[in-house]
Image 1 (cartoon, one colour):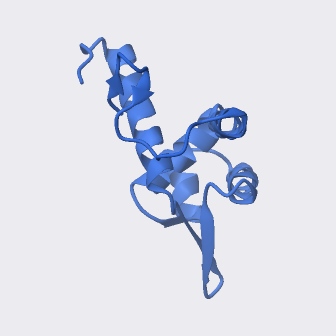
Image 2 (cartoon, rainbow, N blue to C red; image 1 turned 60 degrees about the vertical axis):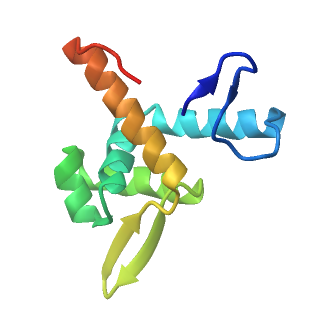
Image 3 (cartoon, one colour; image 1 turned 90 degrees about the horizontal axis):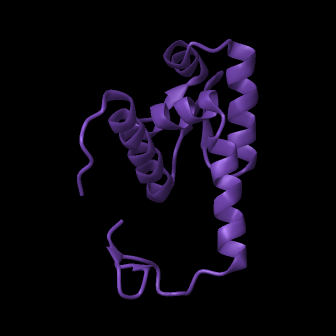
Length: 119
């Protein structure tokens, strides 16, 4: 998100000011995403909805671990689940989270590959 250097506030933002509750909630989201498996799961879901089998294959984690991570993400309100028969299909319902995770992984890619930063 672009930043206006004069005011040090985002130029495309919600109209209400950020306060302690917003920063605390954001820190909680970052804490949940600090686990590499959970981050991988959310990154996978940023690309589209998926069931537990698909997410297990994509992340390389054990199925019980994937299920536990998805439960934490669901309880935190970061992912949603719907039933298709016996299958549970997970998705992101928040474009903010989708963009946050994609940008974080893109930033990490630049750090790992040495690609120059850009706007």
